[in-house]
Length: 398
Image 1: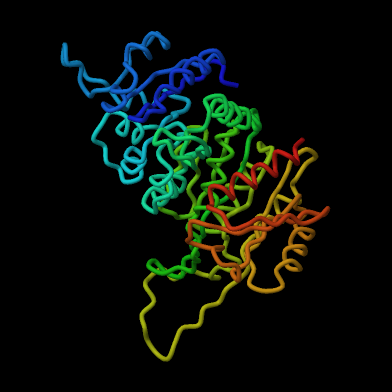
Image 2: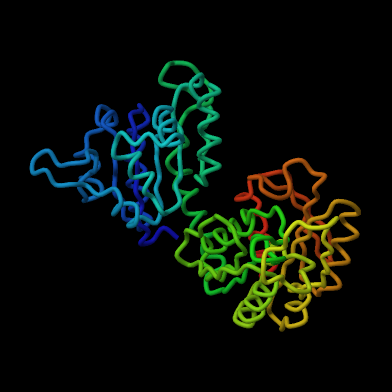
């Protein structure tokens, strides 16, 4: 799956930099096109000439060419690549990446990168184990980077422990596995609903909920990374969809979300109903702001249209529909009833009683329920949860 892929290889100042030469050879042998970007310190270990000879491309290291003053565009490199691999990645570079310290061409390129980024740490065991390094690696993971854990073995310090950069063959396999998985939804169209809905009471007030949309947007990105065309119907959120295969449709109310979902569902192969749609909406919206007068306000509500039930009824053979259920009690029973009554293929259950699950946060803990059984997952980042859910869908599709 690396055939014709464009890979930016970032090389930093580590004794493991010599292994980057083998990485280049392995990537090119798999059919990839490689552009090397080096930090100034990396040139003390391997010369740019070595990499330019292997890649048949000039190595990028400085912001400007010292001979003619021409500018190396980190933005162009970021839009050119299908993936960026930083191997070896020193503690210094990892710290700069985690905190946005763009003082060299490699980190600047990383900050402009639109493609997935893989990081292969390489350092002494004490540096790797230090709390600051571990904190920075966790931060990079939260940003969505793929960390290729170092191995345990003999180190340049003559000590033995964890910190040795993973072997080049395994690193190339990690990239190949990523792109293989990335094609698993190729040719599929996925409809995803995300975020809250706002049900207007008057021109300045609404009924809403705490949904941030993070889970739905993570699902959209995960599907797009696997090759799907995504139609993302989003309630009012502050998030942005980055992948070019995501077509975003912004709505505000449950009624607008229902109209968009039912309109686009016939063209979809898969629907993931992740939005926290209001169950009730005001029977009538006041044309003017309601003043605070008397002892209170009576608000008459009526049910909103049920998007999951509507799509479940519309579902044709070959379409897959997944729902979400956020519960506070009798979680499994309530989720199973929703699964059956709405004709869903499976349902993703969240419980507000689980630490790290629910609205607003960056983590989630889910259980996938289908007619055949139940699959429970540990608490993970919402990006990782999205990968689990999409992986489950891929398995269902065979």
